[in-house]
Length: 200
Image 1 (cartoon, helix red, strand yellow):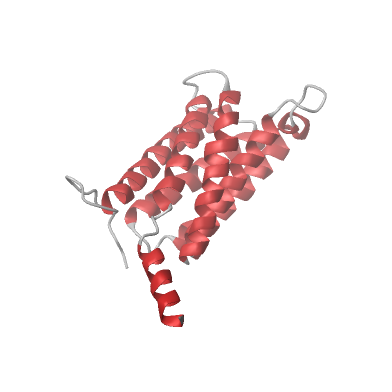
Image 2 (tube, rainbow, N blue to C red):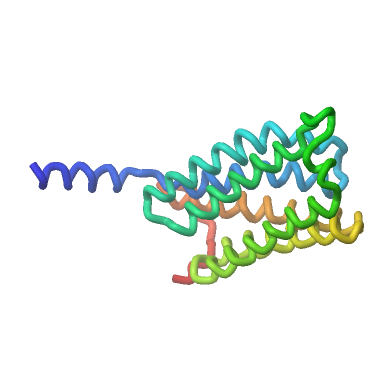
């Protein structure tokens, strides 16, 4: 009986899909849309609210929970945390407090410290990528720079830094899409593979 249960568990583990490409894709698309607005490519950043709640938020948290199940502490922490970021961000820009959003009520300084906290967290996560692969190093390095630029832009009242953060965010999204696609291709038979520069 015990041997049969162990065999079933082993088969289930062997057929469990890698949740990282899903989490990276959710992160990439949501980041791309918001960053395009921050870069000045279009007006109307609230269009990101739906993405932030359901794709960048809920789907990333699901990916994080599946990473916990697979034993990947880094992936679980990253996806769950950034999923939480997107949900908190969406909630913060909704005009639900007398027609004003939490971000408007907090002011640029409050928003700046919110983003600075995420920059610090991302820097810590960046150090966690140094033994993973080069693709993840690029994603988290760019994400740290994007958060830092946006945080300083808000704290210093420098709109140029906010625009720069938008462009860095676009690069971050492209790097995350690349990494996600590389993971999809590596998961099964494909016509080609994308290198990620494995370090371990």
